[in-house]
Length: 289
Image 1 (cartoon, rainbow, N blue to C red):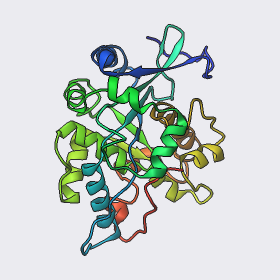
Image 2: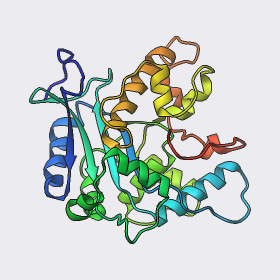
Image 3: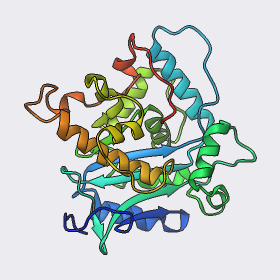
Image 4: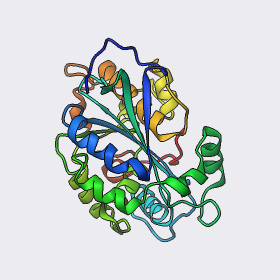
């Protein structure tokens, strides 16, 4: 396992390591033993069945409404795919056998014929190439994944820095895997658990608030920063890679020490539209563009 700049990052030099039930133990062991200590910056993306429910009642803020919307949908629906891209502090990916490595975990719980979903979201995933039948037949059991994740060195670690974009739902699904139970009713308790399992988080959608010329979703941000996508859109592995590459470009252009916006560390642990950012702010829809 090496980190070197001698190989250009292209579709030919990239291996998206597909993880199914049969190789889950081996891949998480590989990450634990050879990856996480040397590549502690972790970009994450999920694919899930969209948003199908809205809460009813009175809410003290837009942020509370957004959290209750998130909670009822994450509790109702099932995770389809998780993408993880590990890098070092300069954005370099691990290389194994002359290939850059990105991980894509495929889960089995979601069933097109039985479960609720948003039609538009599932159509996007179908067009991106996700094979729902393969997920049913070969996919990872989420309870087993949660158990292994807890001892992987990926969560509960203050040295791992999570790189994300508009990631409330991403962390909602990932936290549900970790605690193997529904999300807490109170937003404050959600953030306490988030701080425990994911002590350092960067959400680029929140960081964009401070840069007037930046707007839109992840793809638009990458375009504005001249970051190229490698791999299909709306698959979690390639989306996590785009998240990683875009974060380091955003950091290096706008958020280095001495820049007007200051070092990137002062933007830690705030999720766009939730918690402190949700107080008094109108939040956009959760669908990523």
